[in-house]
Structure formats: structure tokens, C-alpha cells
Length: 466
Image: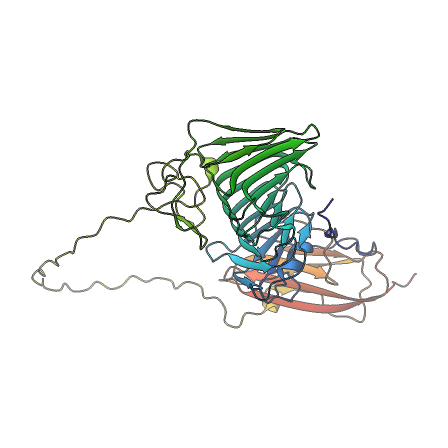
């Protein structure tokens, strides 16, 4: 079930059985997964970078295996936040654009971004929930949530990062409940939708500022919840809380992590070893929310090196910069040694210029054609009074100097089936299609990131009986 008030994302449309097959061909690596594009001002069909939709539509309309790419920029603002509950039960891979600033979502919804499928993933996104009612800025039941900045305004029953599911990993992420009362930086509750199995936090900085808050809160009403934290900073009114009821056990195991206080209620157990750090970390500006470490922080070089930590921290810097990996989402990068000034050497006496050898004949590289159009790359069937054949094929051409990154074929804006093969063709089956009009659209993305589209309208007719 979804959280109270959440409407499940629909599985998608069911297309008429008259259209038996539709080809969506992709020469990009994962041909079975469609890409959906969103931008802060998007209102398109989500299908190409040139026609992005809103992030709400991109996520809620995604189907199993889809990749949702959020363009950089602000989706809403503190004074004009988004309002929709965005929750998906499909298996999605949601992320910002690699090498670009994180997309920033501002919302006063109870659930601005929820992924409930156990195989979903999310990375390189920032979410700010400005509401103080019960809810969570990010709810995640998937496999890996990486490189996130999550902020929640706090309040009773709220959390920045709410994790439930069978096996969830939260990594290189900052979760901050910044309210003055209640709230949790990270909340795990086996009684909420999704349950709780084995939850792992790696190189996470979780902060809860309010009275009665917890940086990490683990509750187990009626079902067990096990949380492992590694290289993690927990700072709150109570740093780590664990409690169970109805036979449920909440167990937290901490290694190479920093926390100062803990509370173990009945049914709750918090285990740590000699690797844990008791002293508070030193942040650049705790009150202002700048949780970058200072060089004197107790957490610098106190973590454990492990490939499972990931290659980079939340700033995209090397995960290990000193003697050992740091604790927390941030890796402190020591300043490099000062470079002494270089005195330029005296110029050497000029040597007599040799007679230049004739330049070798080099064949110039092929140039990408100017004014390239989709019609230069695709062969569509000729327009006739009506198409009574049972099928036809759409073929792609590759002119000299042009590479094709991907191509998508739609019939009446619907996708039915994905096929893959060596030939760049798309078979469209018309068997049983009733008499009427249908539209074929093909969108091509070239290796140079140009998006080209071609559209044709056809009419079907019932073949005459002989």
C-alpha cells in the first residue's frame, strides 16, 4: 500500500489489440528501457530531450525499466513550491545529468518523490520539502539511493529520508530534518508500507535539529527492522533511536560511524564497536546547514575503505583523499602544496631554420551534412490512398559522417513492444487494424546530440475480398 493519501501510479495504458506490434528501436545500450526526460518548465511528451515534461509526469508515468532523466535547474522554489504527491510503483532509474548540477525539487507535498518498487534506483538529485506536516521529502523502497541532498522542514511524523524495503542502500547522501520540533533525518519503520528488512547507510550524514528529533530513528511495530550504518554521521536531539513493539525487533549495528547519544526502548538494540567516534564532528556551518567537514573534525580519516562506499563523495570528489575514507557524506580534501614561482630560463640562441618538408597529404575527415533532416536518415512508406497491407517496415539510413545514438518509433503516440537486432528497421504490423487514420512518428538522436523527427499520417482500409 502507499502512504495515506497517496494514489498509486497507474501501470500505463492498454493499447487496442488491433495493433499487434510496434517497434521502438534503440541503438543505445539498454534497448528495453525507455528514456523519459523532464525539465523545470517541461510540458511535452517526455520522450526526447527536446520535448521534456514535468518531473511529476516523468516519474508517475514511467513503466517498469524506464530511465527518468531530470535536467538541471529548480523545480519550484521555497516561496512557490510544487504541490503534487509524486509516487511510483514502477521499477525506475531516476537521476540528474551526470557532470551537471543536481536538479533541485522544492515541494510542500507530503511525498514530493516516492519510489516504492524494490528494484528502483535514484541518484544525483536534491529534494527540499518545505511542509511541516507528516510525510517525507524522499521515500525509497528500492536498491540504491546515491548522491542525494535531502532537506525536510521537520515536524511530528516527518522525515527527510524514509527508507523501507527488503534491501535498501543509502550512500553518499545528506539527510537533514531542519525543523525546531520532532522529525527524523533518516526514518526506518517496519510498520509503514514497504516494511523493513536489511537497510544499510554508507557515508551518510543524517542531521535532525529539532527538540524530540532523531538523526536515525528505527522502529519495529510487529515486524523486524535491521539497519547497518558504516562511515555515517548521526547528529540529532537523539542521535540514534531504536524501539520495537508487538514482537518486532529494531536492531542497529554501527561500525566506523559517529554518534554521541542513543536511546534504546524495549524491542530496540544498538550495537557498536571500538571503531565508533564519540566526539562531535566539526562542520563549516551547522546552524546554516553547511555540513562540509573542517580539517579538525573528529570524522576525518576515521572511516573504513571499501569499494562499496562508491568512488566519489557528494561533491564528486574522490571518496578517499587522506589516509583513510572519512566518516559522512563529505570527504575533506586537504589543500595542495603551494607551487613555488618558476623563473623562466634564458632563451636559447636561435638555430637556423631548416627548409620545411612538404606537409603529408591527409584526407580531411568527413563532415556532418549541414541542414541534416530526419528525412535524410529514415525511409518511410509512401503515402497512398490507404494502406491495406498487413505490415510495412521503417528503415534507417546512416549517411557518411553521421552516427545514430537512438531512434524511437511510435504509432498513434503508443508503444507496445521493443525489438532489437542488427538491422536498423522497425516492423509495424497492421494486422486487424480497423479502417481509420493512424500516425507514425520517428525520433532520432544523433551522436552529436541533435534530435530529428519525422511524422507521417496513413489510412488503413479493409482489403477487398476476391
